[in-house]
Image (cartoon, rainbow, N blue to C red):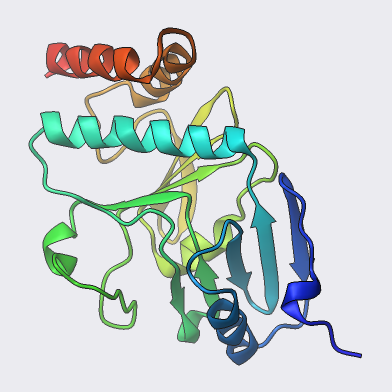
Length: 212
């Protein structure tokens, strides 16, 4: 007996792993689940992961994304945020939906495009993952060639820079090399929970201006 997707229940904060999934089945599942869903999908070499985020996960994703936008605005760097867009490439047998992602150095290459095709378009320059209930697998992002991956575990921001095809932990961001991102973002995310979102954003913007 085959299970239908609508029979699967993934509680918030949990993940479901399914083995031996072909590329065509993965693409069929994506189409069947549609874009307007709360769950996120990851696929690598026949293993499909379905994850249902917690509210804490969504708050972290939103606030960190806001802070990155402020950084880019104050540095006057054009960017394009694509949120949890699905990025996949059949040749590499991998697909992923980041919590948030940004085109920065390659923004001009995808500007105005309604669809991203990794067979011709570059991957996002920065991906952000909120690893509160599960830990992000590197291989999806590595094979797709995403230059920088940030992981937030609820207390610490881990910066990973792609070097010779593998992620290497770094104390600094290659995108913001002159700013202490790993210290500043956790501080202001915490402040948003105490002082409020708007107050934290205003204070962070002042901090960025003082640094530059």
